[in-house]
Amino acid sequence: MGSCSLDEDSQNFRDEILSIESVDIPDSFSMGQTYPITVTYLRPSTCHLFREFYYAKDNNIRTVAVINYKFIKDDCEELENELVEATFNFTPTSNGSYVFKFWQGEDDNGENQYLIIEVPVTN
Image 1: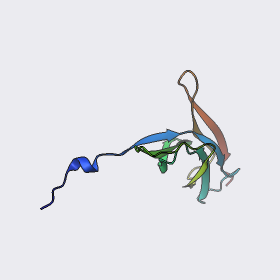
Image 2: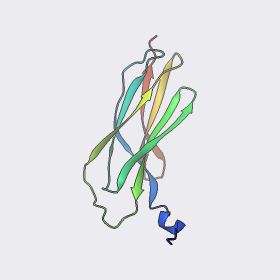
Image 3: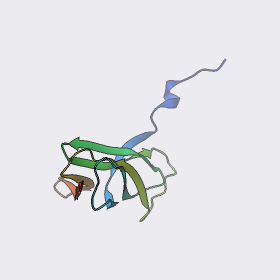
């Protein structure tokens, strides 16, 4: 008879937020249409794998960050300049414009830095 141990299934990864290097986003939106928004970020090691977007709404402001799994393993290889893309869809639901704040890390004082892009809704 075999036995199961919950320890064998213990979490072997942690979430890590990675800074966004660049963004491919339309210059304008039309109400009700869906647009892909693609971000590019540096993958630091072979143990990093895209998990999801952090996506927060505050009226017409959207704060976006990339969350990766970072697997806890001994055989991780550090990567240099490996750019990875991830895409989410956005559908504007109100007039005016949307302000996107893409997280780019922290400065020397620990303050969050953002790439801020304002996109108007044209109709």
